[in-house]
Length: 508
Image (cartoon, rainbow, N blue to C red; front, side, top):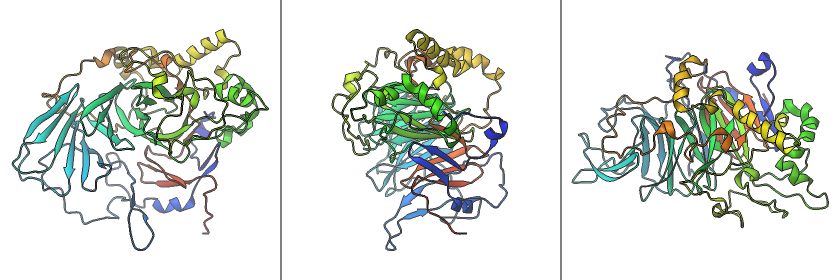
């Protein structure tokens, strides 16, 4: 991770950063998105969101960007809010069902999700429901009506607010994260629970799928990003880099496999370039260095690398690399020079399928190796010293790493941690919404140390490739496009970061 200097450097807003692909630079045209008004209520204003839509239009210009700051811009005429008969709690997430032009899914802070069809009308009275299916901590209802009406389905998931959901790339599975700290993955068509995961602490706020649908990344109030294997139904890594709640996680589908070009390669920020030589010497014990130094006469192997990013309420952007030594820890090092692009991969590489490293869901996963992204100061030349240093890092990452959930709750109010703005809260009516739902068989306070929530020392710990302060207000948007990265913050600043080689010069 990029080393952080004094207070001035930590508070400085970055306008560029460097990774192994090259230089990412803030484009000047992002200045046009600067708000020029005073918010009506800056303390309680809603988060700024950005959405990209591709339209088939005769002009040949299919990409359009529309954003709203205050009352300056409307996409359609505002006619007020109608009386809400279906759910009176706030909406937390809205997405179209993949492969459908008429179905969309809406999540609420009440913990309910509703499936709508734009071709069907909503009734004039509150709907009545009948149970369709139920399982552990979830239930699905249909409308009791003589004619088809909206909503088509009502999902009740977990306890507390349903903060976000995401469809798998093939549209068959649905991942949901809730304020109760659980990730739940459903088969959307058969309405069956595929797997679950519990956060280290607090609620989960965001979720995303890898481009090939093999991995899910979540972020939340434990300040961590967590990587969950869809095939194995277990946590395979955690990432520590944020200093406050993680608000958005997203995979970068355009930077998913990077060749190892040199054992001394630089894969950090531009400020860390002076430490390159020292960093390269100390990397001799890492898996990545072993790959590059195996034999100078052989062609160097290529590691499968997933790139994902995260932004948080600490105003920082973090980029992460999920490498082959984390994904396949028990695999022998490959000598073949094969380039794997996960965007086009439809099945796992030969010899590296999920079954070869699968751990049964009802047993604790075996201890996994640390990421090669750990700081070089933690790497030791001897096995005994390495294990001691490894344990020290695991315990030093966060003070609550060794606490039980009850201890953490007791000490929560004594810590001066940045918990000023919650992205979600438990609805006051959440206790009533689960009267028909089968109560969870797992006590959330006893999940620590189980496959649902392994301890910090039981899974690899990722360090961010870069971690940069890019705004003065908490960040709310992270979108990866082919030629740029788009971010936005609570103030309304929408920034575009040009990718290496994609920056176009702008004349004033």
